[in-house]
Image (tube, rainbow, N blue to C red; front, side, top):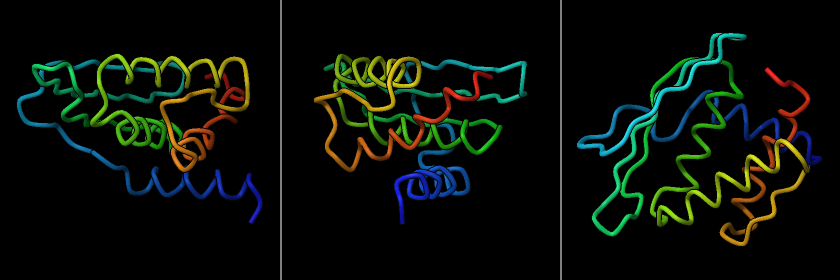
Length: 127
């Protein structure tokens, strides 16, 4: 299996069976995202503990496989991390999809980098 097939498999798997789907109990923050160009809608629920650590991160929404997969992958990668590290991972991800094809993050292990790099091709589809 080549890298492109592996990336497609990761996106399809998370698109069909998203992780952390639903509304988490006692969330402390929430945010909505809507892409009017394609109709994707996502709402995330974040529960920070008193030490500013991501205790729980879940989402609800609908959209294409890439939208659902990217949200699912994000929830997996930042859950359990400090808010500071979670922000850095999101910044590194945004840098990857805008500027490079590889994630430059010292906050993720190799398996996590492969998962997030499966989304590197989305820059070809700016919607």
